[in-house]
Amino acid sequence: MGNCFSDELGGRAAVGGTSASHNNPTNAPNDAVDHFLHSRGYHGLFSQIELSYSASDLRDRDLLSKSDPLLVAYAKGRDGMLEELGRTEVVLNSLNPTWITKHNITHQFEIVQTLVFRVYDVDTQFHNVEVKMLKLDEQQFLGEATGVLSEIVTKSNRSLTLDLVYREESSGSVRLRNHGKLTVHAEECINSKTTTEMDPFLVISKVVENGIPIPVCKTEVMKNELKPTWKPVYLNIQQVGSKDSPLVIECFNFNSNGKHDLIGKVQKSLADLEKLHSSEQGESLFLPTPVGHNYHNKVLKSQLFVEKYYESIQHTFLDYLAGGCALNFMAAIDFTASNGNPRLPDSLHYIDPSGRPNAYQRAIIEVGEVLQFYDADKRFPAWGFGARPIDGPVSHCFNLNGSSHHCEVEGIQGIMMAYTSALLNVSLAGPTLFGPVIGNAALIASQSLANGGRKYFVLLIITDGVVTDLQETKDALVKASDLPLSILIVGVGGADFKEMEILDADKGERLESSTGRVASRDIVQFVPLRDVQGGQISVVQALLAELPTQFLTYMRTRDIQPNP
Image (cartoon, rainbow, N blue to C red; front, side, top):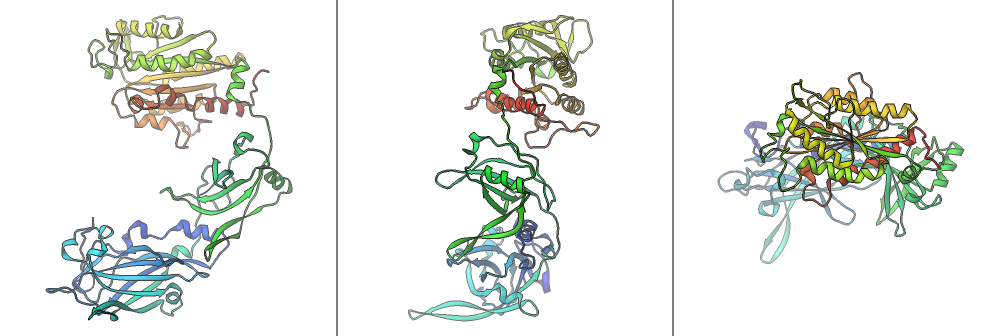
């Protein structure tokens, strides 16, 4: 909050600010700026500058005490508009303040960077308000000073003292009066003198008729890398228009706040990129730079190289289905005690006499009705887990149909009947373990693969709780990532499903096993039922959104072709 006080310099207190070592992050040195400027080839022309301030002989606008000054710094644009750089803390009861808060700005040698500084007396009633929330027109204006950044940094002591000017109105006339001095000191940040690494990534966009670039793909972020080599990206002709259509390839430095810094870009067609690969030559990046009211493309020393280029026919999801590749549906249902007594209406397993499906039945019907059309024999393996069959120990993978020999049922209706029957023949128990069920599904997929089958398996797991064997589940998923298998998880009820989101590697970090092995691909899609209930997207849409991509990734990385 903005009400911190200190005894800085002879009993003066500060409001709404902290020491330089705890600056507001918005004013902290921006390493990304330093390094992407260096990568453009401007070594020494750009520096991060830290500005600090002190004043003397300020006007006293308070009756019973001295002024409580706040400084606001601005950068003046070519159009005369002011852009706020930041605000200091409020120094209480002082006409000769030395502010603690410092501001950072990038010094650009070739540009005249005009700075404007305004000092205000903050009224007592606003002392508990955070400085960035203060309305400046409600404060008393003490004076304004204007200077040029290059004037400050070229002084031998890196300090420049400026007159504070204010308007005085009397007898209908306005006069500019000087009252007080402002001293601005510039210090080059250590960050701008040292070289660290960048986190670059590429965004490839097609250029549509009105000249606007539309992104079609991007690379991964390369952490701490000045000479990145990215993984291959795949573009199809439908995405870009034609081999001669212009593409814009932009290189950004990643920022966690989402405001990525543009390092530079090139504009090339696929045909141009093929020529770059053949010639083994690099293409210099350029950066649009303001010159007057226009922009000039400044050519940089950084270059883009095309290490690999090849063309191939990429078969679609429908090509594989038409070529005889089948999707085989499997289901696994959570019978742990946390679901509640199935005989009571508040249970997630309650069978409503009116015929209204519970959350488990709804997920089975909605997903199964889509996938059954891609399964030729419509015989679906179905399991339960986390329950105690009659006169038996707790089982973490039992055949839903009650058979001790086979796990398959006939169609979606077969799953529904086996589920209803199981509720009458097992006692709900626990804990919630996924490992055995995933292991059984992986075994079926591996046996099919060994027998030369052209099948891809989809396991639906419906659960109400947090998985207990998280690491064992990760190990099973990493192992299964090499098989023709995808796993859909539906979370029902109000549990905290954060660990399930870990299993769904949508954020780009692939699962890692206990032995350090990384999953070859993402095979999990998790959806909490409560997040899609009543929304425009159905459970089946949310669950199956990634399935074609997972299927194609498996087929293409193994060079499996559809039957003609």
